[in-house]
Length: 478
Ligand SMILES: *Cc1c(COP(=O)(O)O)cnc(C)c1O
Image 1 (cartoon, helix red, strand yellow):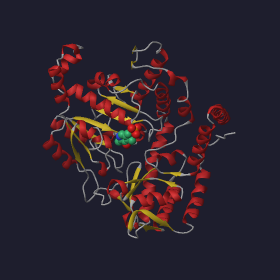
Image 2 (tube, helix red, strand yellow):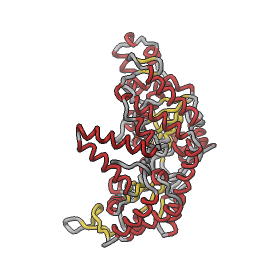
Image 3 (cartoon, rainbow, N blue to C red):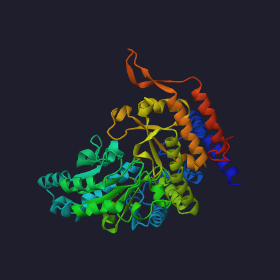
Image 4 (spheres, rainbow, N blue to C red):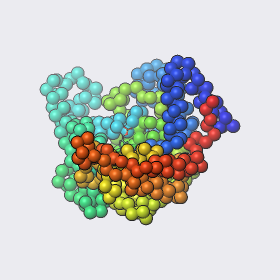
């Protein structure tokens, strides 16, 4: 029954859209067809459920609701209050967090909210106290100048981008690298693993206000008890950005010291990656920071996306089920199968394996850059993204690695055998791809030559698996 409901709901929605702008209806159909027929290994992507997707397509999108539950700057927010309270309640229960803020529109927004709440909470300034006492008008222009100086001179220590950290963890071209004095920690050059002693040494020397843990491209678990110890020793706030692995926390794969929520002062996340919800962000906080995080709007955010908060509530309800725990465990198991598949075929992995949802393949042994590998794989219907490896000789644009993740294909039902085959297909493509030349005949980091027949061979082998594990089974568009 549900299948036919979903099929007719989407078919009719597309007809409504087509009556206004048929090209958008067509692109929407095509996107489904493309997602269905490609091997999606992008580690930050997933497939949200029809219930989550449908929740985003309603009139909640039309409502302005700046403020917080029960305290809005607009009238008529009673239903948004229901939605936001429920999403926050599910989030607190799901993650065991004292406080949850579900308004951030994205992972980057969640991090900005967290940064500002740390500054508001920790920067000691008589001017700030005046400001918070709402005596803003008492501040002179000179007071504001002092305040800007105090706010603008804080220190942040985060994981470097090429070791697997995120842009928002102090990377120079990102605002986080400009609003803070930043330093970065990396990984051990030999093992590729996080070296807690080295992080501690850096923290002792630099004395950051904020220590950021979390990653986008590190294929290993992190011990957050150790990170908290380091933060405590130097008096820093520990902020953990679990954008990538929130699904593994929600699904109780990361427990004890691998679960950041009890150890971090603030935990930020996206909701659309391994957590499999709508595109969005969230901040979890210890009580001490709750009031400052609550000021995310108007500090950093405008009106919340009420339709997305509704979809977060639906996704969190899904994530609280045993079925989701089963899913999360499979995501981690499948990453192991994928890694083993590469290792038995002689490929090199950063850190030599994985214990989360990410596998970082070093493609230099195939004589390729990440850029060439990514393009050749795409020609064969394998969707990945190139990624730097530690101390990458090819820089952040061409890179020497390809990042792979298991959350999306695990949602389709792929298991051990399929992921072993995926490794086989990728090795097949890469070992049959040569580096190309520039127009002038020199070596190129971008162009490549894919061997004859490889794309067809790989596409037909992956089509077999994709047909066996359909995306949105039962959804048939008329
Ligand atoms: C993806 C990601 C973000 C940003 O999320 P957006 O929703 O794209 O803004 C932030 N931090 C980490 C660690 C991420 O992996």
